[in-house]
Length: 253
Image 1: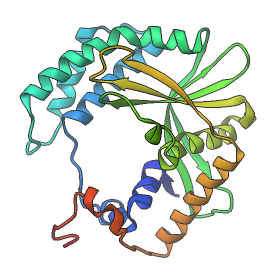
Image 2: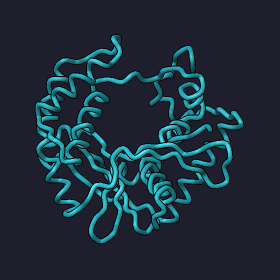
Image 3: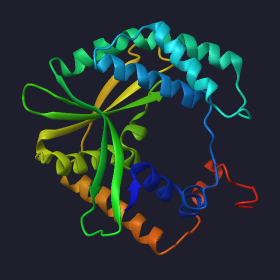
């Protein structure tokens, strides 16, 4: 069965025509770079730390090098930036376990990289697909869904409250509750920021509210995206042109 993910919905919200190019026509708009390599490497270390597996600063360096090697040959690498990232990642690693303990105190790991492939109410052609970075449970019976996000120095209030950004966790919460038959009131959602250039507090957790109204809004956007995708409505969002990799190319002159 066909599926839609949060990232695909996000692409559609950015621009329906961009979604067509990348998701339907399979035109590669972004190949990855040093920043994505850094994010993947740090994410791997966070997962290991959460599972109480050995992960040192040297482990990060090794993972980072592997991720850099996987980049396409034509991706330009700024060696000074890479050297800085190598150092910055090593500063993040020792703070991960402490940040987890300080934020959640006592907890048990329920799942990491938990796959979702769930029915969407009222939809017969598509399922929702996703992977939850981590689910932990605290002694009060609450389940906590969180997603690791690498960033430079952090997120401002606008980014923390951005609807599209937070819909990721809202949708994960909704479909997790369906998958595991958990009362949504027993699930809380959080982002975990891994701040590359911060001088302190390099790992920061913060809670994101995902109540019934927000869930309704997120599902409405998901269904709106599906309706337009299925009906092949590829209207260009001119407000996104300045941020688009396809601007002034053969694909979008």
